[in-house]
Image 1 (tube, one colour):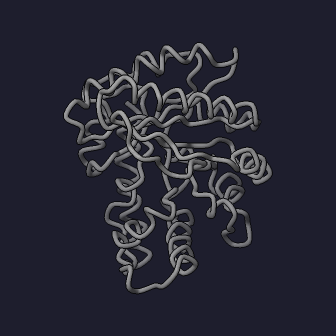
Image 2: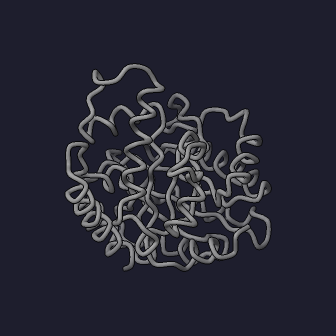
Amino acid sequence: MNTEQYERMGQGLGFVAALDQSGGSTPGALKRYGIEPDSYSGDDEMFDLVHAYRTRIITSSAFSGDKILAAILFEQTMNRDIDGIDVPDFLWHVKGVVPILKVDKGLAEAADGARVMKPMPELDALLEHALSKHVFGTKMRSFVQAANEAGIDAVLDQQFEVGRRILDAGLVPILEPEVDIKASDKAEAEALVTEGILSRLGSLPQGQRVMLKLTIPSEPDLYADLVAHPSVLRVVALSGGYSRDEANRLLAQNHGVIASFSRALTEGLRVDQSDAQFDATLAASIGSIYEASIT
């Protein structure tokens, strides 16, 4: 494991850029960027367009390790290059940004107010490949829709089971049991998720640490015990559909929690902007998210 990356993720000032839209979410990401679905045909063309978009973000003068600790990548992005350099190596060696890989294959159907992850039969091979690409850690998302103990237990049991496999492979996992910001009992669900995580952290092998990616809580500083826990390297927050301004406002109330925003990060970026306009818009976004992340 890269010690410099480990210390940066645990102690550095900044936030995590989530650039990991996969097949299902890519059309929406391109549409917000100004590329309509009827302007391309087939997955290959779609993924070429989104790679060009991500490359524009990563190569922007605004995107650097000064304010961004890490970037989460989709598997296909990990396997591509920027200026002839593998994307994970470009991130780390050119930009000073730690590379992280999204490893889940999407969500299963809802049961007990939650959606666990679909099976990942090729996970071991993917983890081995990620190590060969010099990736530091992974991310995997589940979805909690209600304060249902059975559903939350299923989500957390799966997250920790897979998380231990990722640790055994030599990577640092980000466990992401997202709570739906539209849930009528959001605060209760977040409390159950927090209690469930705390009760499971003791099952990790001594000396090993995970990261957590959680919904910005309705109760400020709900995650304080997680932030301070010796088995947690970092707690990051997802924007979950909030606008950037609202996500920043709420995040700033949670001390020690940093952003891992996707849609909120890229809000306002458009394909028809000049490079100067694009860089200025991205710089303003990064600056505001950074400020909310260092409280």
